[in-house]
Structure formats: structure tokens, C-alpha cells
Image (cartoon, rainbow, N blue to C red; front, side, top):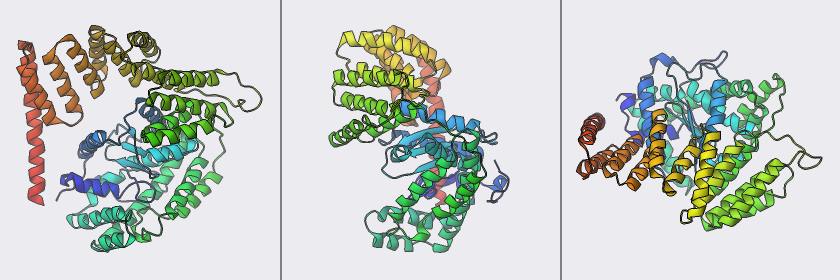
Length: 524
């Protein structure tokens, strides 16, 4: 079986066995670096850059549809700004495959991060909250960028043979079973082939060391405090100890953390110390993640208690982050007046001039203003039954977008405000202009469909929804929308021509997908 024809579920199992560092796995994947272990000839892997990119896109389509995908614009923008800064600091990090890195967050209580084919890098929400400094978070992202830059995933998948699939599946089942019973985990695992698994682990351990060293170089070149890598590894090591009773040592797909810490500590001693002050946006994003990680009544109550304690901590960043978090909690509880009051307090805290004492530290703002603007608009747009508030939101969103035109979240909020404010014509015009520059954003098509619906343009509404579904990997759903567009009473001759052409493209794509699946089935 060719590597790129693996059934996706088995590939998901393989990728799970490559997740970064934490109790249940390691993350892998990207150019060569002097004095690093040789993991094989990258030119000989079966998984080509084109197939790697395609596989990455398919996996991301699945992830984006998962309810635990944290689709929050400020968090995504912050993480990608940080990630792209790290990528830019490493010439050649995009490699011959020209990876388009994308960083995202998923809700998960485990401390973990992972790299997927094609340069997609995920971070668990608990890891984002556990990082005490921006340098610690940067160390995790740099490690994952190292995996991508060294093409660890592509080389791992390319090296797989059919007989390796059974033990890989057994490894994943064992990791899942270990949550309920250590005996069950061992029983499931023993059904696999230990020798093949050991070969996998040896590769993973070498890959982890390589990613550590590349990541160390990346974060140093980007100006972050390299000691953050050691601090975070030590917390991961402590977490791993909590699972040592149920996960056998030979099942752990990462090398001993003590070895990795010692290696990084030796490198730190040879590196000049460069202090770095964290931006306020780091603290605000963590407040957002804490609220969004658990929006149940109990979760919001726990977050509220945490933020109330945080507002009493020393330092403006901590106080402002606590106030910002309380604003988010109040909004989720539909207390919009309280949400606005807490947001105003956060702004006032950040605007205070440094004085002796708790608020004396410097205050780099980074993208803080966009996060404050986003939450302010969130509060207003949640009150869509109040025309006066929505009218104010339209003006505020227009000003925010003009000030921060590159913020995708603020652009979407501007469109949303215009639609809710009865300005569907202006919204449609704005969205069509945006789509000239950002064709790969399903959110723009979703808002455009809403604008068309308000205008009574039914055919165009369904065509826009079809494009949104295409971008999210829903080919059949897109074809259904095109069918509805064809039957719409207002469909023009031009609309019918657009529908015909798009249907032909999507049907060809569907036949290709079905052909791939049939080949996979025949090979199995």
C-alpha cells in the first residue's frame, strides 16, 4: 500500500502516535541543521510535498468541524502572529514544500501540542493556560515548527509499510484504554507487534531531539528567552510522572524528559541571556482561552473565581487580564452592562501610567487593542434585539476595521454589524471586496449568504453557502446548495451558468475522492 493511500482514520492513528510531549504522545514534523541526528534521506520518502499538503488540508477540514476546535478569532490571530514571527526567524523553515504554517487551538485538558502534515500546528487549550510566559509558549511552537521544517511526519508516513499499521493502531487503542484501566491498556497493546513499535519509537525519539534543537535555535533567533523551553519541559516532566503508573515506559512515544532538559540546559549555558517582557496580549488571550475552554455554568463559575483572584495580583497585565476575563464571563451570562463595566476597567488599568509599586513594569501592547476592540464589539453584537446598541456597534466596527484592516476577526464583526444593523447592501459590497483578497475564508461566504438573504437574493445566498461548504471540505453539502440555487425563482441566466460550471468542478472532485476511497478499499 502506498503511504499516501492510507485510510484517513489509520493516518489519524499514526499522527496521534507522533504528538509532541505529554502523557499520551508527541507531535512531529520540517530543512536540515548542522550537528543534528540523521533521520534518513528526505528525498526518498513516499509522501510527496503535494500529497502531504493535501492530507493536511483533509485533516484540518475534519478538525474544523469538531466541536472542540476553538474557532476564536483573537486567539487564532494571536497564535498565528506569534507562530509566523518564529517561522520568519528561521530561514528555510518553509522548506522546498513551501509550507503555509497555520496555528490553532483545540479544547483539551491534556498538556500537549502537535504538528500535522503541511504545516498545521495545534495547541491544546490546557497547554496555552499552563504556559506562564510567552517564551514558554514560543518554545512549544518552535519545537513543532522544528518537526515541520525537518519533514518528520512526511518521512515517518513515507517509511510505513502495511505491517506497521496494526501495531500503530494497537498503540493508540492502548493509550485510550489506559484512561480506564492499565490492565486493559497492556492487554490491547500486547495484541500489536512490539518490534515494529520499537522502530517507531526510536524514530520518534530521534525526531524529538532534533525538533528540540531546531526549536531552541528558532526561539533564540526570534528574540525569546530560551530558558522558557526548560521551564516548560520541567512541567511536562512532572505531568508525565502522574501517568507513569498506567503507561508502560516502552509505550511512551517521547524520550526521557530529563535527557532533553539536560541537552537544552547545556545549550542555554552557551547562549547570552536576553530578557524579554511579555506582551499584554499573551495574558488576554489566556483569559479568553480559560473562558472558552468550558462554558458550562460550572466552568464559568470557576473562571469567575479565578479572575477575581487574578485582579488582586501584582502587575497591570495580571489585573487587566482578570478584568478582561470577568468581562467575558459576564457576557456569557448575558450580563451585558456588567461585561461593559469590566471591559472599561481593563482598559483603564492598561492606560494607567507606570508608577512605583505593582504597576511599575513596562507595558508592551502588541495586538492588545484589537482584542479589546473585539470584545467590545462582541458585547454589543450579542444584543441584536437592541437597535440603538447595534447602530453604535456599526460605527464602532467601522472605526475598528479602519484602524486594524488586517484583523480578520474585526472584519467579520464589521460585516456582522452591518447585517444586523439593516445595512445588507453595504455589507454585501464590503464582503465581495473582502473576498477579492481573502478567498479562502468560509466566514466571509457565510456572512455574504446572510446579506443576500436579507436582500431577498435566494440564488446568490445558496451559491455563497456552497462556496463556504467547499472551503470546509463539504463537497456534497455544496452540491446540495447549488441544487437549491438552481431552483431559486430569482436565478438569472448568468447564475445558472455559474452553477453549471461549479457543479462540474465539484462532481469531478467528488469522483476523484470516491476513486481514492475505492483504491484504498481494494488495496486493503
